[in-house]
Length: 161
Image 1 (cartoon, one colour):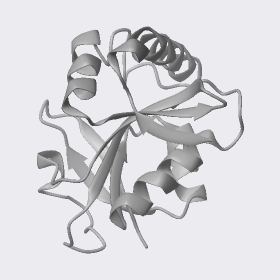
Image 2 (image 1 turned 90 degrees about the horizontal axis):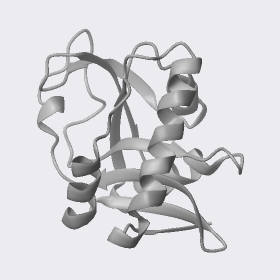
Image 3 (image 1 turned 180 degrees about the vertical axis):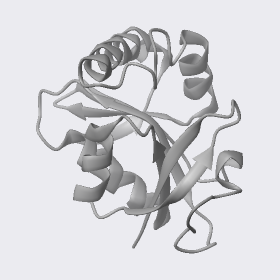
Image 4 (image 1 turned 90 degrees about the vertical axis):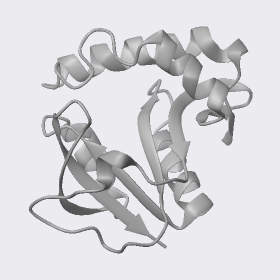
């Protein structure tokens, strides 16, 4: 597998991956986190243009996508009912999804992101048991609760090298 930055030529594939992810989430007791429209096409385009959208390929076929950025995330400035593992510079992963064809793809993407920065933070919805399992399986520590800019609560995780 290979990770590369997304391009505008990938947009239709990314939209399809996210559509499938929303259906999967809804069928696995998590219909609220991404609803029926998140992430919107404009957000995905913005991610691509900013250089923070990535795809994972297997023999040139896109099998996963995610947002990665090494920068402070304002949603992580305050944490409740816990603490971050450290206050060192970190990277963030958001909007990760795969097509499910190759076992371990999401883990591969998370490991790639961690290697880029050595200190990775991520959050997920309380109902997203699939993502919670993935994070625990990959050695992420539960750190507490964060609130997104829209006020919704998320479970916060962190892993360091």
